[in-house]
Length: 567
Ligand code: ADP
Ligand code: MG
Image (cartoon, rainbow, N blue to C red; front, side, top):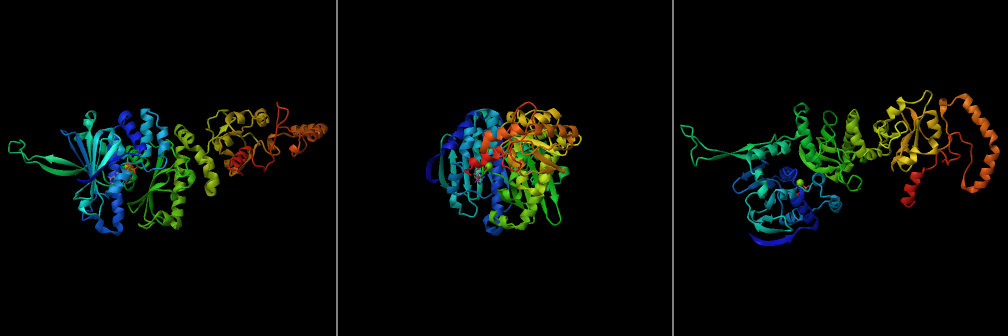
């Protein structure tokens, strides 16, 4: 080895390694999934590069991953003939964490096993997970299409620094040798490795092979010393999961696949697998996660689907195929309708993209509708992603009604802060003669629940939706009706309870108004310019007076948002 240097890990990597080495004992086996996943990505990248440069295969176009182990030495070796890395790439990729939000991620680490394991999976800091089981890792790699002398050897004990050196490497791709810790030697075992590959990597497109050593036997059936022959056996299914027929895929396989694409440790809540032929030709496999990623509300948070064109991996996080309000949906899109050399820029101009986007939007909404049949699961979904879905009516007018049907609210029916009532529930409970859907928006659940505006409704037994999320006023400014029933803000304008009010009551109200004309005049004079108008109201039963906004006035929350935005 020549040109050897020792470098320090980026601070964030050091912190991460410390955590992995000292506090991640549960779920240790995921290191294998992460390393196989990287190897498969490397094969995908090479296949993609080779589309317009066949020579880059160096005559070795049968992409594969090999796993070997040595029980005596306590090592596991993973090898791929994918894209490989240059020296600079090695230093960059295996010495730093490039993703945005790294420090945010580290701040969230709690030292609590399961929680942190989830975060790590989510963050996809896969390579470093090798140090959960290894006290020494050696990586030998060469970028496809370069000279044999361009090989690089990276080595580290996971303790703050790593070394890099130039080496000769005949084959391109990457080889990773894990020297297992004393207490992790159980992984250097044929059976264990095979079952882990099947558990985590069955769906990976690239074959994962393991050597099978056989000895010839003599006439009496005894093994003949020195007659070992090694054959490579493919351990995983090795076909892309979404390509296989639905009927042949079981739930466990879908779940394992989800964990792979979403970098998540926990199960998805739902999935939808569709093959479409005809004008549009695509296969999609979409998932609803059970947990929110840490960057759900960040502008540059990762979102979108993994894009394949005719089974060739094109890019991660292709965000053009789903609207923003469905950014929590994860999955894969494989299509024939785009060209293989499509780029992010080209995606923005391609008219096919919009067609697929509206198809996937529909699929996602249908998937949620189906999920809604399971109350508990849907509540988990709603508590996690409800406020994102509430962005929907503003962003996607065409699907407004569909989205509205998926919304859940607090309501005077339950008087609970839990948002678990649908508009259909509300309509089903409407009073005879009631034509409108009544709601109130305020800051915080208690402010809605205790609002004086509700007095008359409570008295009459008319249900009111209690909206207390930051986004609710924005939502309601884009929702005008559901199933033909208009939404009415009970804190705005004149209150018309429609047929629910009987004639006698109306008459009584008019008489009261007349009798109080004098009082109204005096109050108006006293308040002067600070109010637009003073009126006798029938919406209160206990409180003496309340402030009402004119019908088309911006609400309190919106004002606050606008003010905060400096407008
Ligand atoms: P991620 O896979 O989420 O990017 P990892 O920590 O798993 O994060 O890997 C970091 C980077 O190291 C990868 O993005 C890739 O560029 C590089 N890398 C890791 N393993 C390999 C490999 N087997 N072949 C080529 N590049 C690899
Ligand atoms: Mg990875």
